[in-house]
Length: 160
Image 1: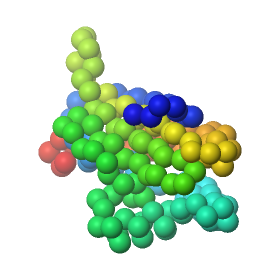
Image 2: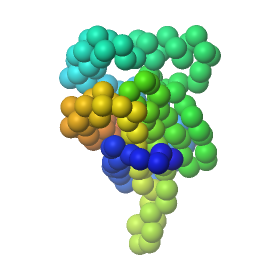
Image 3: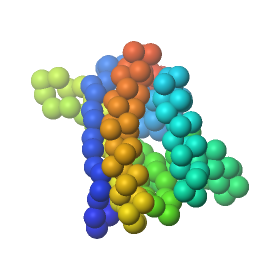
């Protein structure tokens, strides 16, 4: 994907047997459930990065609307496959991709697993500084988003 990565992580969760295997439905479900603390962190992030001329969440949404892009929340959809959806954004300081992959687990469980992976490529020092500061928050938000979705109850295969 990128010749050099400056952040790469992955988190996985076992899905219930009746959960949807549609990665787009799962992505929409996860990213539609943001807690107050996550919204607060995003507001702080947006206030800080705007001063550096970087895109804010509002800017991502407005760009998506202006370009008639298919999006999930603030994320642009780059690819959709039967078992995976790839979201992300490009900006002057970095590019990132977020993959949600729904895969079968090996016997004896024979269930399904949702893996959420992030890869970031920085273009400059600003990008590397940004990732250095943001990485712990990113990891906490991804893990909390997955847990929050699991507590809410995953969409069923018949609902997707």
